[in-house]
Image 1 (cartoon, rainbow, N blue to C red):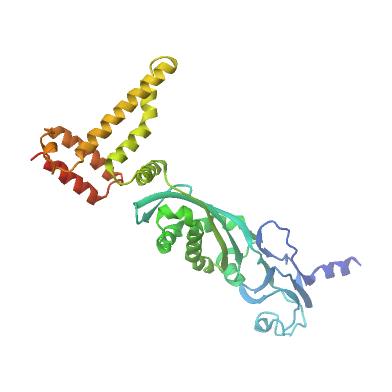
Image 2 (spheres, one colour; image 1 turned 90 degrees about the vertical axis):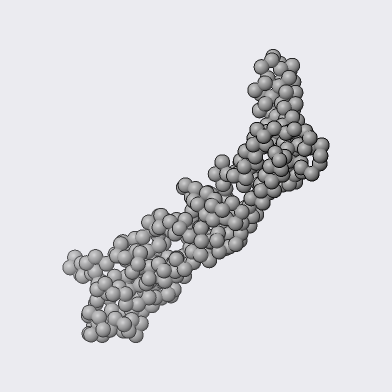
Length: 342
């Protein structure tokens, strides 16, 4: 009786895989010391594919359903080992199951800011993050390129590789999308679609299909965000430089008030605020006067000093360096100021 039990354990008549929902992508059926019985049943569920590998060669791929293993269902194997006897004896072969379910909510992100080209800012260092979903589409390719002969292969095993693919292709996706950085936040769906188009061929190379891609956030480094805020503020007050300097001064008043608030209580705060307002008005008036056209005789007779012109030019140069003034705007203001020295 013990001998018969031993013999029965050596032959397999049902081959199947019950997934446990642990993110397993590939699983090898345990074949150690056993052979597949003639006419055995292969059960492949709806969310699976099965691959037969004999002596290192992929012999056949089975889709969902119950398959009886004969020379008719595995014609390729008739030329491999033990098949010349037409199933008169059992055979040894490795069977791998692959999950074809969508693997959802896989995270991606930029651990460090990455540099991309932008139509408005030139080179921009940005951060972004989101998620994606994929599935196995070609189990034979995935087996030969990725999972190999391992007993199991999970989403966690390939997660780092896929994240790297996403980061590697972000710059090309932004370039191909044609979306300026300022518009990315309002067009995250378009950005995600461009990223998916860029990545799909890379996933296909390893037997995967990229089902979905989302971009949840795109942000600039803090220092560039400040410049962007200034440019947005300038857009709010128009292109008049006098108005822009008044806007800048208004932004600085709270800090001036804090620095000058050496007095006690409300009186000290009021003094600081008053000093800030007065200083802001003087600065705005001086710069606005320096940017007026030189055609008026009264302006020419005002006796503007060369050092004042140079100081104003330095301020304008700083605004140009930050991207607030264009090259054309800077050149026009520079010409106006230099005329005052003639």
